[in-house]
Amino acid sequence: MSDDTKSRLKEKVRALPHVPGVYLMKDRLGQIIYVGKAKDLKKRVSTYFQPSRKLAVQQPKVKSMLPLIADFDIIEVKSDTEALILEGKLIKEWKPKYNTDFVDDKRFLLVRLDGYQPLPAFRLTRNRIDSKSTYYGPFVHPVLLRKTLAEMRRTFGILLGDAKPREISPGVWRLYDDVRREIYGHENEVTVETYRERVAKACDFLEGRAREWISQMEGQMLAHAEKHAFEKAAELRDLITAMRATLERTRKFTRNVPIGATSEDTLEHLRACLDLKSPPERMECFDISHVSGSFVVASMVCFRNGKPSKADYRRYHIKSFVGNDDFRAMEEVVGRRYQRLADEGRPFPDLVVIDGGKGQVGAALRAFLVLNLEPPPLIGLAKKRETIIFPDQRPPLSLPLNDPAIQLLQRIRDEAHRFANSFNADLRSRKIRESILDEFPGMGESRRAALMKHFRSITRLRKASVEEIQQVEGFGPVLAAALHRFLGGLPSEPDNRSTADQAY
Image 1 (cartoon, rainbow, N blue to C red):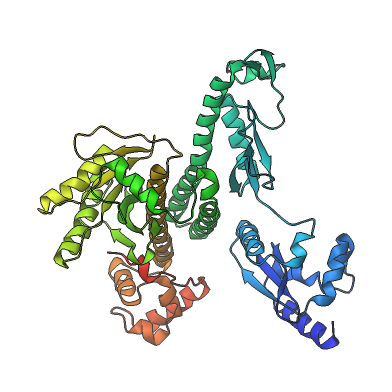
Image 2: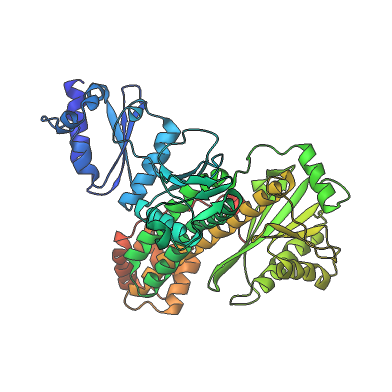
């Protein structure tokens, strides 16, 4: 490393902030050779360029990297947890040379289930070591995950870790030989079939547990916002966003659903299962999302030939009522969607999928009847048992979970659910950001409404000059200048909505 490079890097280090984040070490060609995280970027990065080389002493392999560092970049985040998540994401994306060698390379915990064993146990691991096992995760919080596994053992009577059950007679197994059989409160001697029923229930619980954690955190976030504890609410918002992004990438592991292209055979099979006139080349699916009746929104996603067509996705605000009524919300958005297509002379899809059971399907069908529109083929997919619900007199249809038809319907349903939840989260985050205005002296409802109508978001308002704020009715020079100073410390957030994310 030349003296000029050393001097330049030391200048960059001196300018670093004392905040959590991720740092990217680069060589002279600009290639990223190492990604690391830090609770304090300035303290952490400076250790690479101190004469004492304390970091290199603790980790000798760093010594071979130091002469190659020609530059570095940083990405600031809101918390150490978010830094950990972002570090893992960037390592997977760029695969830097030196990350594979370092002993402190962080990986999230996974839950591994060896389903090929007679009595499979749930184990914690940090690596996917074979293709025979099923993996759940990754999970961000190891303490919370371990507590959950302990709860699963008590609730479902399953084995954890390195438990060693033994066969005491043909087809009958004893799970524990010690006092634990009394603690866990389940039959200690079981058949393989009985135990696998327990495992199936535990898997269902584990797959849904992450969504429950996020839901609980969302409730805490809203409670903090209502108490004007905006800093804590913002921390929870950022953590929820980071966790949701991490968990979304693992969906293919928790559901064992292939993500690749859907063949014509699968569409033909779905046609036969649903007794359709032709394979459903275009499908549209609806889902409703809310938090205890607040922030009620809906999504519509479209699949063409079994693949997502994101340009056709739509998001909806519920306009006809305020409160918690999934049936009315479903009737509204389905009616609005197909009234618009009818008015524009555009064809209806080959199949409409509703996320829900008999009530939601009935509400969707009612939308067509009220508008005097001929409904296309329409079904519901009830989550509890993945049962297909028909709007006519046909009985519910249950297909094996490995059936390609049900897997395709699960994919479009899960995508609608994800899209609705992301819209809901956006609205709640926006509400939290806007609520900071309540802390500004003299900010009444009319002034706040005028500001948001003019600037559309806190981010744009924060970037506005005093003169631009003065253009809003009710803000003179003194008040506009005071508001500009008040907003000076707020973090800015870009508006990243794509054209596919438009709300109706």
